[in-house]
Length: 411
Image 1 (spheres, rainbow, N blue to C red):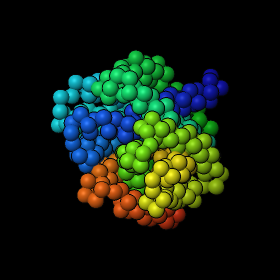
Image 2 (image 1 turned 180 degrees about the vertical axis):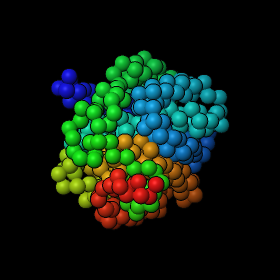
Image 3 (image 1 turned 90 degrees about the horizontal axis):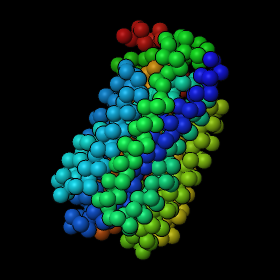
Image 4 (image 1 turned 45 degrees about the vertical axis):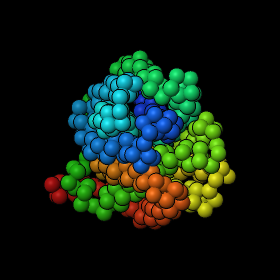
Protein backbone atom coordinates (compact mmCIF):
# COMPACT_ATOMS: atom_id res chain seq x y z
CA UNK A 1 0.00 0.00 0.00
CA UNK A 2 2.90 2.34 0.77
CA UNK A 3 4.30 1.87 -2.74
CA UNK A 4 0.89 2.84 -4.14
CA UNK A 5 0.94 6.04 -2.13
CA UNK A 6 4.35 7.04 -3.41
CA UNK A 7 3.24 6.42 -6.99
CA UNK A 8 -0.03 8.26 -6.50
CA UNK A 9 1.86 11.39 -5.51
CA UNK A 10 2.62 11.87 -9.18
CA UNK A 11 -0.98 11.22 -10.23
CA UNK A 12 -1.97 14.05 -7.90
CA UNK A 13 0.75 16.22 -9.41
CA UNK A 14 -0.55 15.45 -12.90
CA UNK A 15 -4.14 16.35 -11.98
CA UNK A 16 -2.95 19.61 -10.43
CA UNK A 17 -0.97 20.34 -13.59
CA UNK A 18 -4.03 19.76 -15.77
CA UNK A 19 -6.48 21.81 -13.72
CA UNK A 20 -4.01 24.70 -13.59
CA UNK A 21 -3.42 24.41 -17.33
CA UNK A 22 -7.12 24.86 -17.98
CA UNK A 23 -7.85 27.50 -15.35
CA UNK A 24 -4.82 29.73 -15.86
CA UNK A 25 -4.76 29.07 -19.60
CA UNK A 26 -8.28 30.40 -20.08
CA UNK A 27 -7.53 33.42 -17.90
CA UNK A 28 -4.27 34.18 -19.70
CA UNK A 29 -5.92 33.83 -23.12
CA UNK A 30 -7.78 37.11 -22.48
CA UNK A 31 -5.21 38.88 -24.64
CA UNK A 32 -6.39 36.89 -27.66
CA UNK A 33 -9.99 38.00 -26.97
CA UNK A 34 -8.99 41.62 -26.31
CA UNK A 35 -9.10 43.12 -29.81
CA UNK A 36 -12.34 41.45 -31.05
CA UNK A 37 -14.09 42.35 -27.79
CA UNK A 38 -12.81 45.93 -28.01
CA UNK A 39 -14.14 46.16 -31.55
CA UNK A 40 -17.58 44.78 -30.72
CA UNK A 41 -18.09 46.90 -27.61
CA UNK A 42 -16.47 49.99 -29.20
CA UNK A 43 -14.50 50.85 -26.09
CA UNK A 44 -11.02 52.03 -25.13
CA UNK A 45 -8.23 49.77 -23.98
CA UNK A 46 -8.39 50.97 -20.39
CA UNK A 47 -12.12 50.22 -20.21
CA UNK A 48 -11.68 46.71 -21.56
CA UNK A 49 -8.56 46.04 -19.47
CA UNK A 50 -10.73 46.95 -16.47
CA UNK A 51 -12.60 43.69 -17.16
CA UNK A 52 -9.55 41.65 -16.21
CA UNK A 53 -8.61 44.06 -13.43
CA UNK A 54 -12.02 43.69 -11.75
CA UNK A 55 -11.79 39.93 -11.95
CA UNK A 56 -8.26 39.91 -10.57
CA UNK A 57 -9.15 42.29 -7.76
CA UNK A 58 -12.20 40.33 -6.62
CA UNK A 59 -10.25 37.10 -7.06
CA UNK A 60 -7.50 38.51 -4.88
CA UNK A 61 -9.81 38.68 -1.89
CA UNK A 62 -11.10 35.18 -2.65
CA UNK A 63 -7.62 33.65 -2.34
CA UNK A 64 -7.26 33.60 1.47
CA UNK A 65 -10.74 32.11 1.82
CA UNK A 66 -10.02 29.51 -0.88
CA UNK A 67 -6.78 28.59 0.87
CA UNK A 68 -8.50 28.29 4.24
CA UNK A 69 -11.22 26.08 2.74
CA UNK A 70 -8.60 23.86 1.10
CA UNK A 71 -6.74 23.51 4.42
CA UNK A 72 -9.93 22.82 6.37
CA UNK A 73 -12.00 20.64 4.02
CA UNK A 74 -9.47 19.42 1.47
CA UNK A 75 -8.63 20.64 -2.01
CA UNK A 76 -10.96 18.23 -3.84
CA UNK A 77 -14.23 19.96 -3.01
CA UNK A 78 -12.69 23.37 -3.70
CA UNK A 79 -11.31 22.33 -7.10
CA UNK A 80 -14.58 20.66 -8.09
CA UNK A 81 -16.63 23.73 -7.20
CA UNK A 82 -14.12 26.00 -8.93
CA UNK A 83 -14.25 23.97 -12.14
CA UNK A 84 -18.05 24.10 -12.24
CA UNK A 85 -18.19 27.83 -11.53
CA UNK A 86 -15.53 28.57 -14.18
CA UNK A 87 -17.42 26.58 -16.79
CA UNK A 88 -20.63 28.43 -15.93
CA UNK A 89 -18.97 31.83 -16.21
CA UNK A 90 -17.35 31.09 -19.57
CA UNK A 91 -20.65 29.89 -21.03
CA UNK A 92 -22.37 32.99 -19.66
CA UNK A 93 -19.94 35.20 -21.63
CA UNK A 94 -21.47 33.78 -24.80
CA UNK A 95 -24.68 35.68 -24.02
CA UNK A 96 -23.22 38.89 -22.51
CA UNK A 97 -25.15 41.82 -24.07
CA UNK A 98 -22.89 44.62 -22.85
CA UNK A 99 -19.53 45.43 -21.34
CA UNK A 100 -21.18 45.94 -17.96
CA UNK A 101 -22.38 42.34 -18.00
CA UNK A 102 -18.87 41.22 -18.97
CA UNK A 103 -17.59 43.14 -15.94
CA UNK A 104 -20.08 41.31 -13.74
CA UNK A 105 -19.17 37.87 -15.12
CA UNK A 106 -15.43 38.40 -14.76
CA UNK A 107 -15.78 40.23 -11.45
CA UNK A 108 -18.08 37.73 -9.74
CA UNK A 109 -18.43 34.35 -11.40
CA UNK A 110 -15.03 33.89 -13.04
CA UNK A 111 -13.15 35.57 -10.18
CA UNK A 112 -14.47 32.86 -7.86
CA UNK A 113 -14.04 30.08 -10.41
CA UNK A 114 -10.45 30.91 -11.34
CA UNK A 115 -9.51 31.27 -7.66
CA UNK A 116 -11.04 27.96 -6.62
CA UNK A 117 -9.54 26.02 -9.57
CA UNK A 118 -6.19 27.76 -9.61
CA UNK A 119 -2.81 27.79 -7.94
CA UNK A 120 -3.87 28.01 -4.27
CA UNK A 121 -5.88 24.77 -3.86
CA UNK A 122 -3.58 22.93 -6.25
CA UNK A 123 -0.47 24.02 -4.34
CA UNK A 124 -2.09 23.06 -1.03
CA UNK A 125 -2.96 19.65 -2.50
CA UNK A 126 0.50 18.87 -3.89
CA UNK A 127 2.31 20.16 -0.79
CA UNK A 128 0.41 17.67 1.40
CA UNK A 129 1.72 14.79 -0.71
CA UNK A 130 5.41 15.77 -0.74
CA UNK A 131 8.21 16.52 1.68
CA UNK A 132 11.25 15.59 -0.37
CA UNK A 133 11.27 16.94 -3.94
CA UNK A 134 8.54 19.37 -2.93
CA UNK A 135 9.69 22.22 -5.18
CA UNK A 136 10.10 19.82 -8.09
CA UNK A 137 6.54 18.50 -7.66
CA UNK A 138 5.15 22.02 -7.25
CA UNK A 139 7.03 23.24 -10.30
CA UNK A 140 5.59 20.40 -12.40
CA UNK A 141 2.09 21.16 -11.12
CA UNK A 142 2.38 24.93 -11.56
CA UNK A 143 3.97 24.42 -14.97
CA UNK A 144 0.34 23.99 -15.95
CA UNK A 145 0.25 27.77 -15.66
CA UNK A 146 2.86 28.01 -18.42
CA UNK A 147 1.38 25.22 -20.51
CA UNK A 148 -1.96 26.98 -20.38
CA UNK A 149 -0.36 29.59 -22.63
CA UNK A 150 1.14 26.93 -24.88
CA UNK A 151 -2.11 25.04 -25.36
CA UNK A 152 -4.94 27.50 -24.94
CA UNK A 153 -3.62 30.75 -26.42
CA UNK A 154 -3.25 29.29 -29.94
CA UNK A 155 -6.49 27.33 -29.48
CA UNK A 156 -8.33 30.47 -28.39
CA UNK A 157 -6.92 32.44 -31.32
CA UNK A 158 -8.01 29.76 -33.78
CA UNK A 159 -11.46 29.43 -32.18
CA UNK A 160 -11.97 33.19 -32.34
CA UNK A 161 -11.07 33.23 -36.02
CA UNK A 162 -13.37 30.28 -36.73
CA UNK A 163 -16.48 31.00 -34.61
CA UNK A 164 -15.99 34.41 -32.99
CA UNK A 165 -15.05 35.33 -29.43
CA UNK A 166 -18.44 34.52 -27.90
CA UNK A 167 -18.67 30.93 -29.09
CA UNK A 168 -14.97 30.45 -28.35
CA UNK A 169 -15.67 31.19 -24.69
CA UNK A 170 -18.69 28.87 -24.80
CA UNK A 171 -16.60 25.97 -26.11
CA UNK A 172 -13.99 26.52 -23.41
CA UNK A 173 -16.76 26.58 -20.79
CA UNK A 174 -18.16 23.25 -21.92
CA UNK A 175 -14.67 21.77 -21.67
CA UNK A 176 -14.67 22.45 -17.94
CA UNK A 177 -17.88 20.47 -17.47
CA UNK A 178 -16.98 17.62 -19.81
CA UNK A 179 -13.30 17.09 -18.94
CA UNK A 180 -11.98 19.13 -16.00
CA UNK A 181 -14.72 18.50 -13.43
CA UNK A 182 -14.85 14.69 -13.97
CA UNK A 183 -11.04 14.53 -13.73
CA UNK A 184 -11.08 16.23 -10.34
CA UNK A 185 -13.93 14.13 -8.99
CA UNK A 186 -12.42 10.83 -10.11
CA UNK A 187 -8.73 11.29 -9.34
CA UNK A 188 -8.14 13.81 -6.55
CA UNK A 189 -7.42 12.57 -3.02
CA UNK A 190 -6.88 15.26 -0.43
CA UNK A 191 -3.88 13.59 1.22
CA UNK A 192 -2.22 10.16 1.44
CA UNK A 193 -4.87 7.91 2.95
CA UNK A 194 -6.85 10.77 4.58
CA UNK A 195 -5.03 9.87 7.82
CA UNK A 196 -3.54 12.06 10.50
CA UNK A 197 -0.47 14.03 9.50
CA UNK A 198 1.83 11.75 11.53
CA UNK A 199 0.53 8.66 9.73
CA UNK A 200 0.17 9.92 6.18
CA UNK A 201 2.64 7.60 4.48
CA UNK A 202 5.11 10.39 3.77
CA UNK A 203 8.69 9.71 4.67
CA UNK A 204 9.42 11.21 8.08
CA UNK A 205 11.50 14.36 8.16
CA UNK A 206 11.13 15.64 11.72
CA UNK A 207 8.49 18.21 12.50
CA UNK A 208 7.85 18.87 8.83
CA UNK A 209 6.63 15.35 8.13
CA UNK A 210 4.57 15.43 11.33
CA UNK A 211 2.30 18.13 9.95
CA UNK A 212 4.12 21.29 11.06
CA UNK A 213 1.52 24.07 11.13
CA UNK A 214 1.93 27.83 11.63
CA UNK A 215 -1.15 29.98 12.26
CA UNK A 216 -1.63 32.96 9.98
CA UNK A 217 -1.24 35.43 12.86
CA UNK A 218 2.18 33.96 13.63
CA UNK A 219 3.34 33.99 10.01
CA UNK A 220 2.32 37.63 9.66
CA UNK A 221 4.67 38.57 12.51
CA UNK A 222 7.72 37.38 10.53
CA UNK A 223 9.54 39.66 8.05
CA UNK A 224 9.78 36.81 5.56
CA UNK A 225 6.00 36.67 5.19
CA UNK A 226 5.85 40.31 4.11
CA UNK A 227 8.79 39.89 1.77
CA UNK A 228 7.06 36.91 0.13
CA UNK A 229 3.84 38.93 0.07
CA UNK A 230 5.56 41.87 -1.65
CA UNK A 231 7.64 39.90 -4.12
CA UNK A 232 4.65 37.86 -5.24
CA UNK A 233 2.95 41.19 -5.84
CA UNK A 234 5.83 41.94 -8.23
CA UNK A 235 5.02 38.72 -10.06
CA UNK A 236 1.38 39.81 -10.33
CA UNK A 237 2.09 43.35 -11.54
CA UNK A 238 4.52 42.30 -14.26
CA UNK A 239 2.33 39.37 -15.32
CA UNK A 240 -0.90 41.40 -15.43
CA UNK A 241 0.83 44.03 -17.53
CA UNK A 242 2.45 41.64 -20.00
CA UNK A 243 -0.27 39.04 -20.43
CA UNK A 244 -2.99 41.61 -20.99
CA UNK A 245 -1.07 43.96 -23.27
CA UNK A 246 1.67 42.04 -25.08
CA UNK A 247 -0.66 40.86 -27.84
CA UNK A 248 -2.19 44.34 -28.40
CA UNK A 249 1.39 45.72 -28.35
CA UNK A 250 2.40 43.14 -30.95
CA UNK A 251 -0.60 43.95 -33.15
CA UNK A 252 0.31 47.65 -33.01
CA UNK A 253 3.80 46.71 -34.17
CA UNK A 254 2.40 44.89 -37.22
CA UNK A 255 2.37 41.27 -36.03
CA UNK A 256 -0.64 39.05 -36.62
CA UNK A 257 -2.77 37.94 -33.67
CA UNK A 258 -1.96 34.27 -34.29
CA UNK A 259 1.79 34.94 -34.49
CA UNK A 260 1.70 36.93 -31.24
CA UNK A 261 -0.30 34.20 -29.51
CA UNK A 262 2.19 31.59 -30.76
CA UNK A 263 5.09 33.59 -29.34
CA UNK A 264 3.41 33.76 -25.95
CA UNK A 265 2.83 30.03 -26.23
CA UNK A 266 6.53 29.61 -26.91
CA UNK A 267 7.22 31.57 -23.73
CA UNK A 268 5.06 29.03 -21.93
CA UNK A 269 7.07 26.15 -23.38
CA UNK A 270 10.32 27.73 -22.28
CA UNK A 271 8.77 28.38 -18.88
CA UNK A 272 7.74 24.73 -18.52
CA UNK A 273 11.31 23.51 -18.91
CA UNK A 274 12.90 26.41 -17.06
CA UNK A 275 10.61 26.34 -14.02
CA UNK A 276 11.17 22.61 -13.48
CA UNK A 277 14.94 23.08 -13.79
CA UNK A 278 14.95 26.04 -11.37
CA UNK A 279 12.75 24.21 -8.87
CA UNK A 280 14.95 21.12 -8.98
CA UNK A 281 17.95 23.38 -8.36
CA UNK A 282 16.16 25.03 -5.42
CA UNK A 283 15.63 21.63 -3.78
CA UNK A 284 19.42 21.45 -3.55
CA UNK A 285 20.62 25.03 -3.03
CA UNK A 286 17.65 26.77 -1.38
CA UNK A 287 14.79 28.90 -2.69
CA UNK A 288 15.68 32.57 -2.30
CA UNK A 289 18.58 32.91 -4.76
CA UNK A 290 16.76 31.23 -7.69
CA UNK A 291 13.65 33.27 -6.80
CA UNK A 292 15.70 36.47 -6.92
CA UNK A 293 16.97 35.52 -10.37
CA UNK A 294 13.46 34.93 -11.70
CA UNK A 295 12.32 38.39 -10.63
CA UNK A 296 15.37 39.92 -12.29
CA UNK A 297 14.35 38.22 -15.57
CA UNK A 298 10.83 39.62 -15.27
CA UNK A 299 12.19 43.13 -14.95
CA UNK A 300 14.61 42.57 -17.81
CA UNK A 301 11.75 41.43 -20.09
CA UNK A 302 9.88 44.69 -19.57
CA UNK A 303 13.07 46.71 -20.02
CA UNK A 304 13.52 45.09 -23.44
CA UNK A 305 9.96 45.99 -24.42
CA UNK A 306 10.55 49.62 -23.44
CA UNK A 307 14.01 50.10 -24.93
CA UNK A 308 13.95 47.84 -28.00
CA UNK A 309 10.25 48.10 -28.91
CA UNK A 310 8.50 46.97 -32.07
CA UNK A 311 8.36 43.48 -33.54
CA UNK A 312 12.05 42.88 -32.75
CA UNK A 313 11.34 43.01 -29.00
CA UNK A 314 8.58 40.40 -28.95
CA UNK A 315 10.68 37.24 -29.60
CA UNK A 316 13.30 38.41 -27.08
CA UNK A 317 10.59 38.96 -24.49
CA UNK A 318 9.03 35.56 -25.24
CA UNK A 319 12.40 34.00 -24.39
CA UNK A 320 13.15 36.04 -21.26
CA UNK A 321 9.55 35.93 -20.04
CA UNK A 322 9.56 32.17 -20.36
CA UNK A 323 12.82 31.98 -18.43
CA UNK A 324 11.25 33.95 -15.58
CA UNK A 325 8.54 31.36 -14.86
CA UNK A 326 8.47 29.45 -11.60
CA UNK A 327 7.94 32.15 -8.97
CA UNK A 328 4.67 30.55 -7.82
CA UNK A 329 6.24 27.14 -7.27
CA UNK A 330 9.22 28.56 -5.37
CA UNK A 331 7.02 30.85 -3.27
CA UNK A 332 4.64 28.06 -2.25
CA UNK A 333 7.57 25.68 -1.64
CA UNK A 334 9.25 28.27 0.57
CA UNK A 335 6.01 28.74 2.52
CA UNK A 336 5.75 24.98 3.02
CA UNK A 337 9.40 24.77 4.11
CA UNK A 338 9.21 27.72 6.48
CA UNK A 339 5.69 27.55 7.92
CA UNK A 340 4.71 23.89 7.44
CA UNK A 341 2.92 21.93 4.73
CA UNK A 342 -0.44 22.15 6.49
CA UNK A 343 -0.21 25.94 6.42
CA UNK A 344 0.27 26.38 2.68
CA UNK A 345 -3.36 26.93 1.68
CA UNK A 346 -4.06 29.80 4.06
CA UNK A 347 -0.64 31.49 3.97
CA UNK A 348 -0.11 31.13 0.22
CA UNK A 349 -3.69 32.29 -0.26
CA UNK A 350 -2.95 35.47 1.66
CA UNK A 351 0.29 35.94 -0.28
CA UNK A 352 -1.63 35.49 -3.51
CA UNK A 353 -3.83 38.40 -2.47
CA UNK A 354 -0.87 40.67 -3.24
CA UNK A 355 -0.32 38.91 -6.56
CA UNK A 356 -3.87 39.43 -7.77
CA UNK A 357 -4.24 43.03 -6.58
CA UNK A 358 -0.95 43.93 -8.26
CA UNK A 359 -1.94 42.00 -11.38
CA UNK A 360 -5.17 43.99 -11.57
CA UNK A 361 -3.15 47.19 -11.25
CA UNK A 362 -0.71 46.13 -13.97
CA UNK A 363 -3.50 45.18 -16.35
CA UNK A 364 -5.46 48.41 -15.87
CA UNK A 365 -2.50 50.79 -15.73
CA UNK A 366 -1.17 49.35 -18.97
CA UNK A 367 -4.40 50.22 -20.77
CA UNK A 368 -4.69 53.59 -19.07
CA UNK A 369 -1.11 54.52 -19.98
CA UNK A 370 -1.72 53.63 -23.62
CA UNK A 371 -4.98 55.58 -23.77
CA UNK A 372 -3.30 58.67 -22.28
CA UNK A 373 0.03 58.58 -24.12
CA UNK A 374 -0.48 56.35 -27.16
CA UNK A 375 2.44 54.18 -25.98
CA UNK A 376 3.29 51.51 -23.43
CA UNK A 377 6.89 52.67 -22.92
CA UNK A 378 6.51 54.45 -19.58
CA UNK A 379 4.53 51.65 -17.92
CA UNK A 380 6.99 49.06 -19.24
CA UNK A 381 9.81 51.03 -17.59
CA UNK A 382 7.85 51.09 -14.33
CA UNK A 383 7.42 47.32 -14.60
CA UNK A 384 11.15 46.88 -15.16
CA UNK A 385 11.93 48.86 -12.00
CA UNK A 386 9.38 46.84 -10.03
CA UNK A 387 10.99 43.60 -11.22
CA UNK A 388 14.42 44.76 -10.06
CA UNK A 389 13.00 45.70 -6.65
CA UNK A 390 11.45 42.23 -6.38
CA UNK A 391 14.80 40.63 -7.20
CA UNK A 392 16.59 42.55 -4.45
CA UNK A 393 13.88 41.83 -1.89
CA UNK A 394 13.76 38.09 -2.65
CA UNK A 395 17.50 37.88 -2.09
CA UNK A 396 17.04 39.05 1.53
CA UNK A 397 14.37 36.49 2.55
CA UNK A 398 15.32 34.25 5.48
CA UNK A 399 14.71 30.55 4.86
CA UNK A 400 14.90 29.54 8.53
CA UNK A 401 11.90 27.41 9.49
CA UNK A 402 9.42 28.73 12.03
CA UNK A 403 9.46 26.01 14.68
CA UNK A 404 6.25 24.68 16.28
CA UNK A 405 7.42 25.96 19.66
CA UNK A 406 7.59 29.49 18.25
CA UNK A 407 4.05 29.16 16.88
CA UNK A 408 2.76 27.98 20.26
CA UNK A 409 4.54 30.77 22.11
CA UNK A 410 3.20 33.39 19.72
CA UNK A 411 -0.32 31.94 19.89
